[in-house]
Image 1 (tube, rainbow, N blue to C red):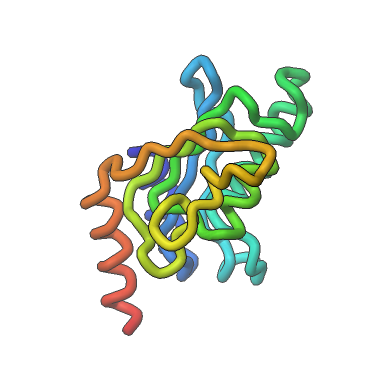
Image 2 (cartoon, rainbow, N blue to C red):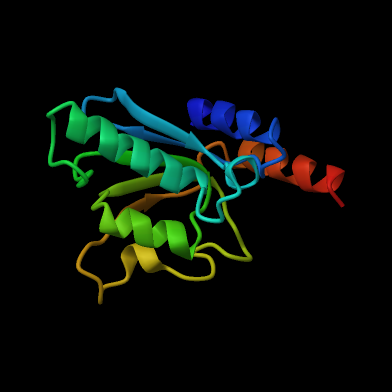
Length: 149
């Protein structure tokens, strides 16, 4: 989560909401990182989770390891509860575990507003571990929004 927080702080430098993500392989090694880049790239889908998932899939596909785009043995660590779009990407990437920091009471899709990651009608379910460094993750976001209001 500390690496995800570093990525979140880096997102702030481009005016993006400070959210960071890390994909960790089964051996605990970092496969890829990502951060919000919507403002930097002018791309509404450039959320931290999507950026990290894209980078991890590319790294595993090009490295010859794993099952290409399927991140079936990986864990996604992110500073904020994933939104519906990111939760959908997590399910489609077959990521089995998500660890997140702060809850998103307005748009979260891992248990607060929606629970897409554990939706039994989908073909893949995700283990969710919330609240890791929750106060630090939440404080970073609160500080950002206080400056931008």
